[in-house]
Length: 128
Image (cartoon, rainbow, N blue to C red; front, side, top):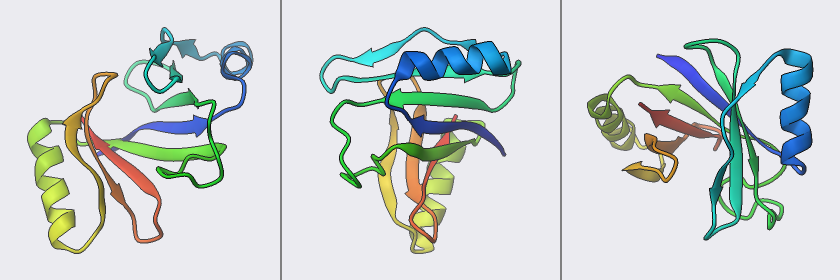
């Protein structure tokens, strides 16, 4: 497995995106926006098959209002390699008593993932 991406809640999506492009040489995806929730994000890449950063913006963030919605790191994702592995690992974690925060599914931005909580309550996406 490898870390697929790190997600960071930001107050100014465009300013943060520009910073990572200008100073750290990131390449940016197009903007993803969910018109129902007003969520939007960019994925920043640092080379092919490298860990990415997801900059995320949601206008109604309140301290700890659910899925770790506060400014800063929101979650990290590990790439499991296949849908089958996502499913199997999710079930193994469930059987071992870990909380499943989100069942395996295909997300609006195209990921197949589940979300689990590690022993200290951090959100970990298991994704393809």
